[in-house]
Amino acid sequence: MDARDGTVLLHRPRLHFIDIDIEDALDHGSTTCWIFADSDALFDEDGLCCSWPHCDCSYNVCADGWSCASPGAESWSLWRATIDTYRFYRDALERDSYDGNGQEFEMYSHVNFEEMYNFNPQAASIQCVYSSLHAFSRGMVTRDVVGHEVGHSFHRKETTYEYSYES
Picture 1 (cartoon, one colour):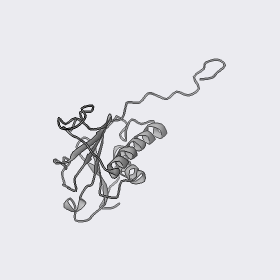
Picture 2: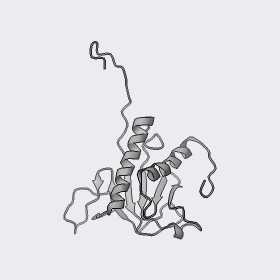
Picture 3: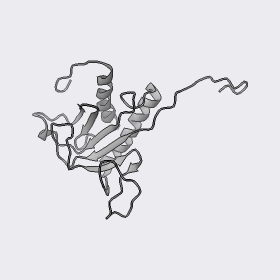
Picture 4: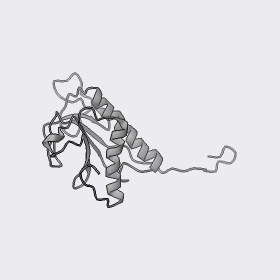
C-alpha cells in the first residue's frame, strides 16, 4: 500500500494452507504407491502427531492413524525442510504446493530403497495416481535434497520429461 494515498502497489493472492503427511518408513520399502503400511505417522500440517490413548497427550489426531510420535533428529529435519520447500513454492512461485492446487506433501523418512529397486537412489519422488510420494533413506534428509525431490513432482505437473533411473 502507498502510505500517502492508500493505493495497492503489490497484491498477492491468498494461498491455501499447507497439507503435510510425514511418516517414518521404519527401514521398509515397496514398489507400490501405498508403500509403508506399517509406517509411523510423525507429523501433519498441525505439527507432531500425538493422539494415542497411551500417550501423555491428545492434541493432534493425524489422519493416517493413531500415533504417539517420537521422531528423531532426521524426521524433525524432514518436517522443517518440508515447510521450507512449501514456503519457497508459495513465496517465490506463488503456488499452493508443488502442483499449484494444494496437493499434500507425502513425505517418508528412513526408506529402504534396496527393497524397492535393483539400485539404491537414496531419495526419490514417486509418481502415484493422484499425488507424489517423496521418500528419503537414512542420512538423505537435507533441505536441498527435499527441495530437489519435490522439484521432480513440480516438473511432472508442468512438463513431460522422460525420467530413467537417476536422470
